[in-house]
Length: 351
Image (cartoon, rainbow, N blue to C red; front, side, top):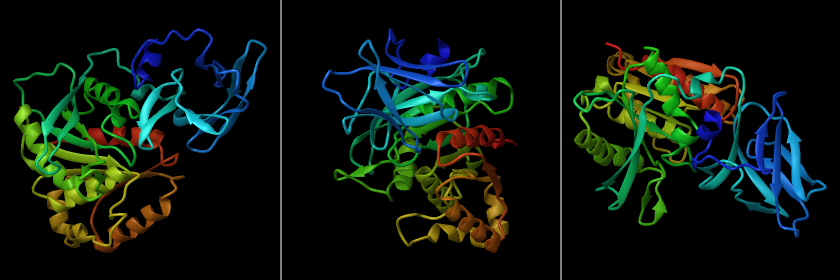
């Protein structure tokens, strides 16, 4: 039951009855849904490509048995051409909306399942932003056996386009990954701060404002709300996709603040403007090495942006800076990003 509960972004113990999704011993999955009599065509469409047609059985249930790769998949239930949000599948936030998903268990996924040892806690905070003028919020992971009297290092961890501050918990299982690594002595106990990168100014999303929001609002709030170590060697930032752009800009623009950076499905360069002035930090390899103990870049070999990753490889080679570079099997997806986080965390905050 723990696996089922942990897979729910809207956490509850569902009374499944005849409806819902079941993961079968042979690696397949079965989805059963009860829909209005007027429904004529029902499909399960996964955002990463596969689409499966449901068929009506003799009891009036729409059913499909299917096989898909293990791990996380955003999923739309499409009824007569209209996407519906099903209460019988897990619900998260992605593609800038509430969205169903499936999370198929598989061999080797234990690193992001709940640990039997001590577990950390995820807390939501609210704070007033000087940058946006609005009340904003963030999630903070507190490590197992959290001690309010102890000062902790901090990782600022960002999601991708169309997601929000819940992504790294519900989709990424970051808290479970952290619990396991910390309990095993493979990562330092730390706070992890997750906030929405889809920052809005005057009612519209502003792609450029997040690094300023982070530096002027988020970091000061966290350092007022918690006892934390405030030097750069105890402050790190990482992000996936859009969050990697925010990480690149923030860390390279503020070497006085960050000693570690992680770009997952990662972009060195801004994707939406010509200005790449933050890359000037990489012009001096010695200065770069002195300012960043870890600069981690990683991507799935099947990522749709892989050509951009190779272009950034060329920039790294041209500038002669030292980075950690990793490739994974997979695409632009949570299977890769979970592995990125697992491999990045043990590198942080080592004296």
